[in-house]
Every structure is written in C-alpha cells, then in structure tokens.
Amino acid sequence: MAGPSHAGVLDASWIAPTTNTDGSPLTTLAFYRVYYSPGPTPCPGTAFFQVASPTLSPEPNTTVSFRLTGLTIGTVYNVSVTAVDLIGHESTCSPVAGAVAQGSVTVSPIGSASFGSVNVGSFADRTFTVQSTRAGAISGAVSTVAPFSVVSGSPFTLSGAGATQTVTVRFTPTTVAAAIVNVTFTAAGDDISRLVTGVGIDLPVTTPPTVTITSPRYPTPYTTSSSPITLAGTASANLGVTQVTWSNSRGGSGTAEGTTKWTASGIPLQLGLNVLTVTARDTIGTIGIATMTATLTIAFTFTDDPLVAQGTIVRAAHFAELRAAIDSVRTARGLMPFAWTAATSTGVLGVHVTELRRALNEAYQAVGGTAPTYTDPTVASGLTVIKAVHLNELRAAVRGLP
Image 1: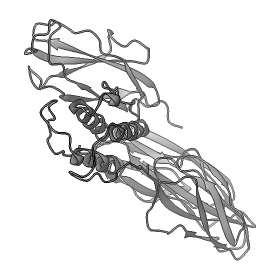
Image 2: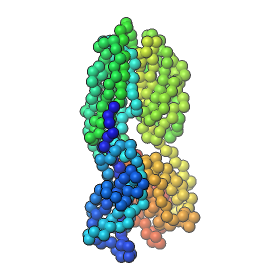
Image 3: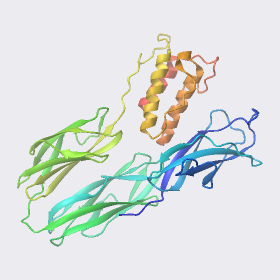
Image 4: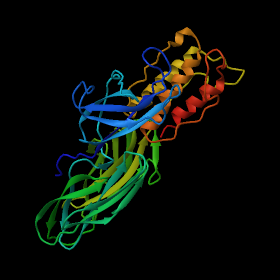
C-alpha cells in the first residue's frame, strides 16, 4: 500500500478586520498569517502561510478564504489567523478551528476488492469510483500490473467538487494461482492504492451470474432523504446462485434475503453520494455485480412555507428554524455550527438576516459552490424592513446547497 501522503489540503475562511485595537478604522492591512499545527495551539508558531490582503482597508463582513496545502492526509490540524499591518504590527491570534486534512480525490470502495475465482482464459471486472473533493479541475490516471489491467476510466479529469469517474479494472488470470496486487489512483500529486485479489482456476467455462436491481429505480440516479433504504432484484446463474450480498462505498455491507429473487433491507446511507454494489455468487464462487448510486439529502420543514408577502407575519420562530437548518448543513459539510450573536427572542433584527446569510455562504464556499444572491444585499438595522422574501430566499438556498 502507498505510504503517508502529503497532498492534503484544508480550506480556511475568516472575516476581515476593519478596526485597530483603539477603535480607529483599519487602513493599513498588509497581509494575514495563517498558522497551522497538529497541536492545540498553532498560534504563534513557526508553521504558517502568509496571505496578502487584497485591500488596505477591508469592508465590513468581508470573507477571506485560503487553501492550506502540503498537509498530511488524515491528520487533524488546528488553524489560527492573525492580521499584520504595513509596519509589521501583528494582531492577537484568532480563535482556533480544527479539521482533518483531505486529499483532492477519494476512491471507493474503501479497502481491498476481491475478484473471486476466475477461470484461466476468462476475466472478471470490478469498478471503482473516483470522486473530487475540491473545486476546479483535477486530472489523474490509474495503473496496476498483470494479471490485472485498467480497461476504462483512465486517464480522467474531474471538474468541480463532487464530480466522479468510474474506473473499470479487469482480472485476467493466465495460470492457476492466486494474485494480489495494488491498483494505484494518482491525482493532484497524491497516490491512493487499493489492494485487489483474485484466484485463477481451471474449470469448465461457465457463465458468470447475472444480477439486476429492480427497486428502487435503476439505473436512473436515485435521490432520497430517508435512510436506511431497501434494494430488491433478481439474480441467475447456470450453476445456480448461492448468495447475494451488498456493500456501500461509504461503509456497511450485508447479505440479502433470497437468491434468484432477493431483498436487501436496512442499507444505511451517508449524506451525499453512495455507490451501492450488489454481488451474486454461484456454486464455484464466480461472481456477477450490479451497482447503483444513491444520493442522501437533508429534508427540511419550515413553518409557514412559503411565507406570503404582506400576508405572513415574520416571527422569531422562522429565524430559529433557519438557524437550526443552516447549522445542520454546515456540520454535514465539515464546518462548525455558526456563532450566532443575537438571540431570536429579542425580536426580528437586521443582524439576524445578515448572520443567516453569512453562515450559509460559508457552507457554499466549503463545497466550492456559488453563494446565493439575495434581495437587499446589505441589511441595515433600523433601516431595512425584514420581509418574507428574505426568509424565502434563505430557505430555498438551504435546500439547494450542493
């Protein structure tokens, strides 16, 4: 297997400062120092990135974003930011935030993959799914050694976070023997290996089992807000089907009930894309495989949905529901819950709308999406009337988060 990778990245963002410690306007901001460390107190420290400020005098509520690179994948890093002015005065350290450094791509299924027993002179295929975790275009390739080969999906280019590429690997035994090799996925300077195994056998040629998923709809992409789910289908083989099993690329596996007509219930899904694989085996261990994708989304229910302009009174409860919904989508995408500053029990305030937008925009940035557009982009306390359209836009943006 590949050794530890140092192609891990973290995406950090913060709100630009606007004043000096004496309360005067900040007009000499030169750059930021983004400190990072696996330890609990990264700032001050010797490991940091220096990020130039795009302006000497930031506007209020300006979000600054930066990607930390060259980190060790799988390691938790703590990050803290300081601001430095033109003559070298450095601010105090910001509060510490932590996250796990991730690679630019993931490969599923996780762990080793078995091709089972395959007759000499025949072959068996397995598929892997490469998925981008970052915005932008990422190119890569897949390699392995005989008796395995890559028959499709390499080289590849993934455009945007969440983009996927299916890679087909073939086992073609030439001798009666077991084979164990690595399949290596290379992208953005990172190598991810998956161990593959297979056994060459010398038996009369047989037809591999055929397995079909009939429920839910297949192969049309399947989206649901419920978990777990149930799959059902059929399987056949000229030597007879002995077992049907399932596995999820995001974790979990099990055995279906039945063989020629089978049902696999209680399949847990993780938020986002799940690649489900159903495998049928015959009496000599030859396998047949069917796959489908299932995307789990978060379902939200809001009071007075939609709010009617000049018909629905905007209430504190509407804001409390949006706060809970936004915190849930932030957590699902690796962000901390937002630090809300004003209690909704104090009444409906302009700061409530401003904070909801900021918290949701950060979630969009975390997945490389484009932040929503809003009516009355700047909400001024005491001047802007809080309207139904402001909350309807936020509800739609929560539901539309990639």
